[in-house]
Amino acid sequence: MPSGDRTDQLPAATGSPFADFGLPGEPGTEAFWTAARTPLSRPGGGGGWTTLFLWRGGPADLAFESWTREPLPLRRWGATDCWYAEVEMPARLRVTYRFITDEGAHADPFNPSAAGGDRSIAATPDAPAQPYWP
Image 1 (tube, one colour):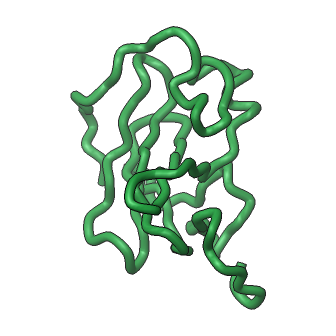
Image 2 (cartoon, rainbow, N blue to C red):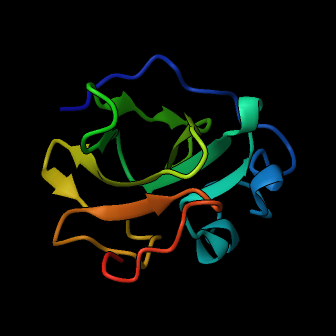
């Protein structure tokens, strides 16, 4: 369960902090949420990827299945409703994930690739195609 009080809020800045991922605009605005599609990846260190996950609303954790042990707490962008995580992922990875809130588990509302009612699929851009798995 996510903690009710997060102390890792970042101060809001001008411009888009997620421009490197192709997301324009200031997080939390309607224009930003209209353009939001996740997960989004950009080249990371060591041949891997830095992947952005977004959640709109209150505190949440990001939980991966069979890849990481503990859920990752999302960080809040200023005083907005934008919560996010930038996750370092290895090359050629495909994994299911979900957001955990006080209300339960949720699929990513910005990701059309689902894996059941409360799970979504993240794949790095270089992940091989798997025609029998979304």
